[in-house]
Length: 162
Image (cartoon, rainbow, N blue to C red; front, side, top):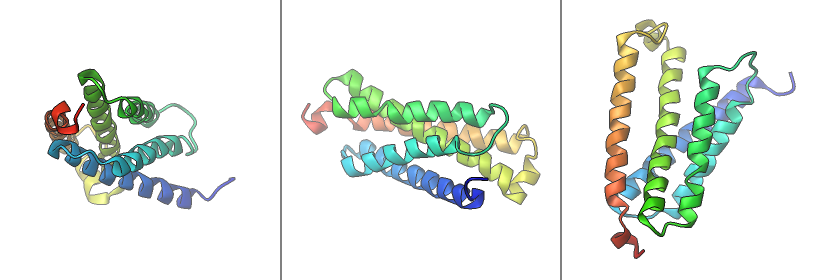
């Protein structure tokens, strides 16, 4: 093996968690009407790196994680354009929706990994087809729908002068 897999896994997990935390700060800022450029840059960078590093793990076939990784990478990269050109309602909405989507997808994967790697959760949902897993993912989705709606309301043109 070319690299140390446990160390690579640790780096990937740390960057993923930092991306989720910084994403929550960014969404909170949008909800409050605060534009947090530094946090946003950090969130977008960690989200993109999380997606890219996810493809560095050995695999023999495409899995659902790879598909989510493609979507997360796209949703994490797409806000870069609207962030640069936030004039107009469409660009602002595109930025908020794609940023919240990228954050949701990272959180979705975190929940999946928690149910796979944490023994008590793995016992509750060994195949991830059981109700505890489904209920958790539905609650996470509902939370992010609310956060997205609140961020769209908070990120208004009058708050930023454009």
